[in-house]
Every structure is written in C-alpha cells, then in structure tokens.
Length: 639
Image 1 (cartoon, helix red, strand yellow):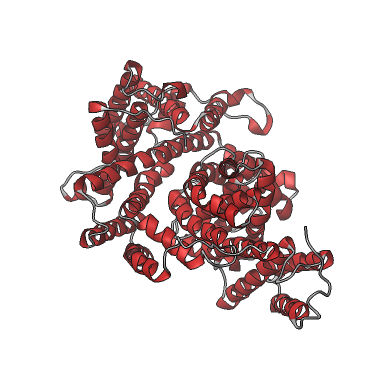
Image 2: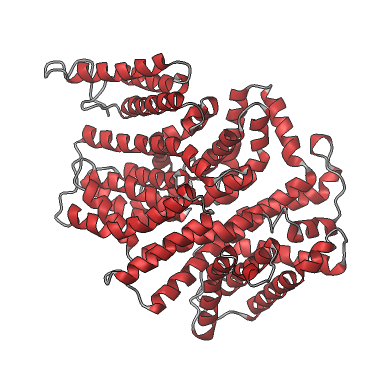
C-alpha cells in the first residue's frame, strides 16, 4: 500500500475523517440488519455500491494523483471533481438499483455512462492506492474480453460489445459488486475494526510485552519474540510487508544485537510476518473468502489451515533456536524486559475479546463479521471498565475512522479483482486455461502442481494477497480440481503459493522491507528466507496428496499426519541448519533432510514411516549426546 497521503487540514480533514468513520459504520448497520428490521429492504449490491463510493471518494480526497503532491493540505479542484463524480455514480446506483435490477438485460445509455465512469474511477483509485500492477491486470483482462475475438485457437473468445462489457462488470453481481468486495465490505471491515480497537486500548503493547517476557531471555530470544509477535500481528494485519515494517523496527535491531547476522535477522522477520497470512483464526481475512467461494463454514477452513500453519511456525522456531545454539547466541541480557507475571496480568483483558470472538465463531456459528463485532464490543466494554485501557470519546471515534481508512485499500483491491473475475467469467478463460494446463502437464498431478506453484508465485508478485487469491483460484484452481485434487486442497494450495510470492525472489516485498531495516543485501536475505520458510513450500504438496494434514480423514490418519509432520519438521530443520545440540556432519545433515522429506510425504502410506522417523530422531539424539566422548562422533564444524 502506498503511503502518499495528504496532510489535510481544516474542513477537508474533518470531512475525510467523517467519511472514513462512515465506512465501518455502514458495515455495522448492514450486518446488524437494522434497516430490514425497520421495513427498508436493501439489496446487497446497493450496500456494496454505497460502500465502494465511500472508498473511492475517500481515496481521491486523501491520496494525491502523484507522489510529488503528497504535501498538499487541501484537495485540488480536479480531485474535487473526481469526488463528486464518485458520489454521483454511487448515489445513482444505490438509490436506483431496485429499478436497474429489473432491466439489467437491457442496454441503456444511462447504464453505459454510469458503468464507464465507474470503471475509470475504480482504476484511478487503484493506481493511487497500489500503483500500476493491479491496474495493469485489470486493463489486460478488459482488453482480452473486448479484443479476444480477434485471437485464434484456445484463446479466441466470442464478440463482446464494450457496452455489455462495462455494464456486466460494474452493475452485475459477478464482478465489481461481487463476492470479493462483499467479503471486504463485511468481514474484512469488521476484523479491521476489531484489530484497530484492540490496539487502541493497549492490546498490541500487551501482546508484545507478553512475547518479550515469555521468550526474550531464552536462547535467541529476540528472534523467538519476532516469530511469536509477527505471527499474531500478521494474521490480523493482512499485509506481510506492513507487518515487517511494524514489528521489524523493534525485533530486527534486537536480533542483531544478540548475535544474529543482518541477513538472518531480516529473513526471520520477513518469514514470520508472511506466515501470519496463513495462520488461523483470522488468516488475513483471505480464509473468509475461501469459505465464501467453497460454500462451507469458515470454521472448516480455519481448522483445515491449523496443522500446516503450525508446522510452518514450528519450522521457523526450530531453525531460529538451532541457529542460536550453533552460533552461541544467548537471550536478551538487558534489564529492560517486562516481567512475566505483570505481562500475564496485562494480557488477560486482551484474551477476553478473543475468547468471545472464537466462541461465537466456532461454537455458536455466528457469521465472521458478527463474531468480529462481538469481539469489538467486548474490547470496548473491557476498556471502559479498566482505567488504564479507557479512552476518550474522541479516541474511540478516531479509531473507527482509522479502521475505515485501513479498509479502503483492501476494498479497492477486491473491487479490481472482481473486475478481473468478471472479465474471465465473460470470456470463459478460466475453464479453457484449466484444460490447457491439464493438457500441458500430460495428466501428471505432480507436473501440474509444479506449473500451478510457479504460476501462483509469478502472478502474485506485487499484488495484495487477497486479490492474488481471488485471481489465482479462478485461473489455476479449476485445473487442480480437474486432475482429482479436492476443492479445499486446491484452494489452500493456491492460497499458500500466492502468499509465498512475498518471500520468493525477485519480487519479494516482505524481504525487501526487512532488508531495508537491517541494511542487508536483499537477494542474500531472500536466500535465507527461503530456507527458514522451506516447510511453506513443501506443505502444499504434502496436503494435496495427504488431506489428513487438512483435518480431512479419520482421527487415526490425522494423528499420524500430525506426529509425522512434527518429527519431519524437526529432522528437516536440524539438517538444514546443521545443528542438533552440536554441529552435524554433512552426511548426517543429508540423512536428516532426506528422512524429514520421507516423513512428510510418505507418512500417509503407513504408520511405519512415522515410526521410522521418530526412531531415527531418537537414535540420532542418543548417538550424538549419549555420553561426552560420543558427542563429537560424526560431527564437524558448520560454516
């Protein structure tokens, strides 16, 4: 997300704050169904048009057309025109949608004009918010839909008139005003508000202090703090690079001071922050989109994502610990760490909102948005009851407005992703591309998964994770399902590799942000990041062939997968770092890496594989550390 925001003053600043506050307030009104209870029927598309209007107008007010103009304290005349145009278009759709929907099949001048202006405004807002990448994708999709009939072969499309193309994408239910924007306007807005309120009343500091108190003095303590805190913040923020910029400013210098190299400190923070995007219960809100697309409860998605995410963080944690052991890195030696007892007391008020959120979401089966609002309400009540958390009325208003500003970026990206989805739906490229990928792979599931992984990483570079998932699940997902991969595994596979674009060179945004903080070479940092995140690159292939890793199967199969996964990650981490309480020889490292891979990929064939991996870990530990004279057998210093 671009940070070129105008420092507005006076009435413009007040107007912008009021409009920003209206963004989450509109979500609360819609989700709580206040208007229908009053006898006023509101179509979903009417609400989405109103919500998008607020986001467009707010973008033109606060984000300048060029970075060079970011010091403007007022809104220039041309942006005033864009604000008025956005309000006019949104108002027309919001108030006239009841009549528009009855004549949606008829092409009229007013629909074409409204749609054309709306698409242009959306693309300009996306350019200001995120640069040219998403705009380029949208323009390619529109161009393909309009000019595709001039192509030949599998990419040839039927003739689609410009008027029909514009109306379908801006006024229809399967494009801009479709599922992606709906999830952003309800679920994402609700969870962003929950996160902002939680941080306002000191929840962020309480979590950070607890992480430092719990892990700070352990071996390699600051790195373990980075893993723990970045996991939580990344899950809520939905932005890997934003999470690095927030937590990395504190954790990276601390890691460097205790002995981690610049490159490794930056790599650890980048990986830990990126992993938060796939970590339940929030999963950066993308998990809610997955549930919408699959038509299943979100609880099913969150439970399915649990084992892979925990194995991911176990791998990072173990490597961090082993790196510290190999290089003699101790914990934080300063006396400025918070006390564990006080930190536990301070975090209790933060646990209550999360308990309410999880209870309503997983036990009462409330909608995700309603559960998030419950968590927000509990947070506010707790903060009012405790003097050290209590805020002024102005503070609560400001946090609502700040939440609205944070939602705008995601909503604009989801709307553009909806535009791309609409174009793909009109042309039928999604299904034809799936057929081509299957043909290209020759029916080989392994080869198709390889093509899909590479395609997901490439298409996800420079694109926000939510938009990446939406586009990839339309383009790549059907091909995986066609060769026999179940729907949930296919969606999770696409989600994982789209997320990994933040770590994979050459466009590894999370790594670049971390490297800039640590002042380390970006590509070398990316190399270490790939090693720390190795499980994230392996686990999608693993759960495709063994759905037990996604909690799909009998309890015995799930238990086998869990045990094999933990032991496999242990073996793999030790082999990659080259340390298991003492340096390991090259031969032993190769053996451990190979055994770890076997445990992960073949555990589903038999319990014997899991037992072999467990036995190997026990034997290696006893052989290496059974007595002082055996400690050096088979070991060699590792560079």
